[in-house]
Amino acid sequence: MTKVIKEKFNNVILVRLFLIAIVLISVLYIYFLNSTIQAIVETKNNGKNIQIISQEYQSLENEYFNLLGKIDIDYARQIGFVDQSSKVDYIVRQTAVAYGRGF
Image (cartoon, rainbow, N blue to C red; front, side):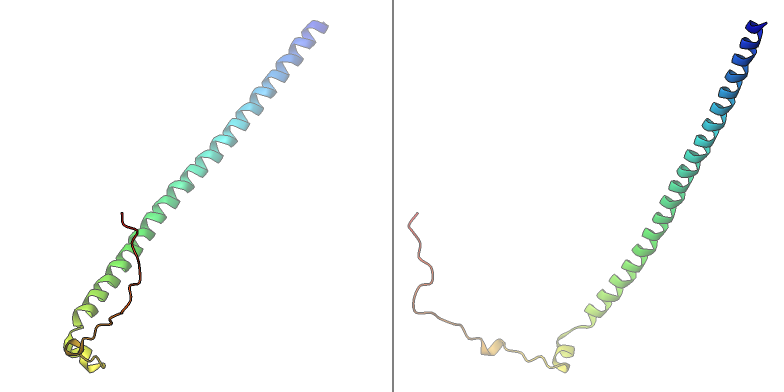
């Protein structure tokens, strides 16, 4: 009789352990599946953000080149540029600054 009780008790323990293992594996599966889905969604969001930043960069670059194209000699003179090409002065030093060792 005790042998039959021990076998039933062992079977009940095995069934409980099996059910606990199934529940634990299911929870771990759901957790890892959820984290994988979150990583995929975050990657897609980052890709969209990169596209938006890239478009903003391109529009700012176009605006910069448009403004750069508007700068010419007439505009420079309007804001105070004075042509110094006829007044080029060179600074001349009478003594040598650096001496070589004679390679």
